[in-house]
Each structure stands twice: as structure tokens, then as C-alpha cells.
Image (cartoon, rainbow, N blue to C red; front, side):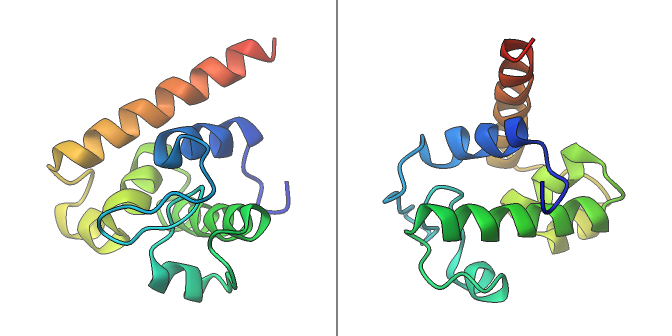
Length: 119
């Protein structure tokens, strides 16, 4: 609520990023539930990326900044979260990376599922 992000979207991202594992670490170095890269974690004032509360706070804050930057376009914000805002700006849209496109589709699918289960 603090960052005006729906809980169902955060839950969808956590599901896709880490399969809800707070100890998750990717081959590229992303850490925790929302798979924050060390630089992003630092920029979002995350002290311990493996602390669930700290990681979710930092990841949600970063997502809110991406939504703001890309005028609440959820697909672009998710692309920026996954591939970096520079890539979204460079390609003037979702970058042509299969990993990023799959990430967006999976997050949106879980997001719709979690929203429908609330009704």
C-alpha cells in the first residue's frame, strides 16, 4: 500500500522471480524473494536482500519507480524490472529478449490468477 502497488502484483512477481523462496539466488546474482540485483538493493536501501520484509520493501519500491517512469504501463514497468530501464528506453518498448517477454507474460498470468481468486 505504501507504494500504491497491488498486493496481487507483488505476489505474482515473487512467485515468478523466486518461487517464494527468500534464499533464492540467480546465476546472475539476483537475490531474495523479488530477485534484487546488488546495485538495485543498495539503491533501494535494502540492508539484507535475504530478509523477506526488506527484500519485498525494496523490490516494491523499485517497481513503483518503474511504473512512475513508464507512466503506469505495467508491461513496460515489468520489462524494466527484468531487463533494466535503459533497455526499455533504448528499444522504446519491451526489449526483444525472450527471457523478458516470458517474465512479463508469467507475472501477468499470476497477477490475473491472484486477482480472480480474491473475488
